[in-house]
Amino acid sequence: MRRVVITGLGAVTPLGAGVKHTWRRLLDGNTGIVSTTGLGAKFDLLPSRVAGLVPQGSRQDGFWQAKDWLPASEARQMALFAQYAAAAASEALDDAGWHPTAQHDLEATGVTIGSGIGNLDEAYNTSVAFDQGGYRKVSPLFVPRLLINLAAGHISIRYGFKGPNHAATTACTTGVHAIGDASRLIMFGDANVMVAGGAESCIHPLAVAGFARARSLATAWNDNPAASSRPFDRDRAGFVIGEGAGIMVLEELEHAKARKANIYAEVRGYGLSSDAYHMTAPQEDGDGAYLAMKQALKHAGLKPNAVDYVNAHATSTILGDAAENKAIKRLLLGSEGRKRASEVNISSTKGAIGHLLGAAGAVEAIFTALAVNHNVLPPTLNLENPGNPPEQFDCNYVAKVAQRRPVNAALSNSFGFGGTNASLCVTKYE
Image (cartoon, rainbow, N blue to C red; front, side):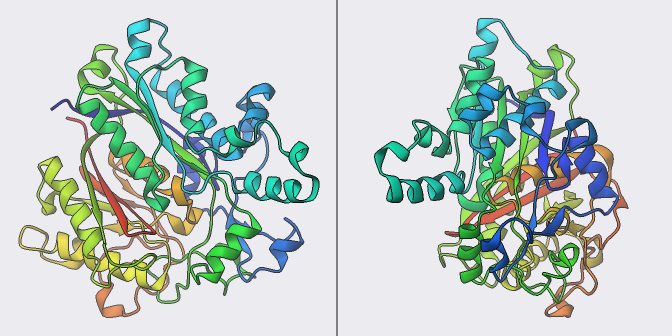
């Protein structure tokens, strides 16, 4: 089977526009979660008034404005989630040094980028306009800006990539599914290079209202947004909605070596499973998460005791964090795992950026690759007291402060509504 390595990274997150800016602020313990007060009257009436918003400003300062990344003519055709994807893809391709012009290279380069919800703003605003003004109030760009696969489509068109053009949309597992699927396209010879990841921008009153009605969102920290996303903490009480994009350039190993590309890490394994249990809630024992991680290690050819770090899905919900914690401990403290829970290193970077839904898995896979590359564990912010119940939360959750540790192999988890689960195994390239 052909080996797959990571040669380029790009991101737009609540911590900033650009991977270096985002990663530095993450390790420094900064947060991108802010109040939604001032975004509009409808936001002010919602029970959850915090969000992980991409900061606005110039690219030079590590912030976001579309004109710094895209020509105005292209930006007009794209929904915001696709703009984020295009910007992150541009950064990742520059980082990888991959700008092919030869026909055989263009045919061997593909794109797989997904989104969980995509362009809710467009759907809502156009529905209102159509209801009030009829047919002529519908933009001719309505459908292209609505379709989730247009993020991948725009990037393929922009660069002339003629390989696989694919989009995953599997709720909050989207980002890992996109990267994992892309890795298999390379493994099986459908492409030599893939631009892969997830993008999301649906911080809209309707989306917040929907998640709040489902009792999924944090509502007790509106006066202290920085403290609202608190994975694994005993006071956790729901996730914080976020936005952004994460894109990787994946490449067949010999192809990368031939052009002397910088290699961050290797994608060694990819596991998928289903809870087959409930529409939104995980199984209490985390069996679906366990099966996905087990499959990822099986494909990687690694035993559980080889895993040095887990970037957890942990969104800061009571049930979800507890189920994933059980699954990780079951896997990594089993017969082929470590002896003590304190030796299991887990963190959730959602404490800093919130939950980016369809983009979450891709951004967190980038953090996982950087953890492997730099031998550092990113922190879990707001972790004052692990627990609920405390006796089950006895691992190293990298509370508040990043830790320097050898990281040769890591797992990055993502789980979504409908019981869909995925885990990516990333290792040092050797």
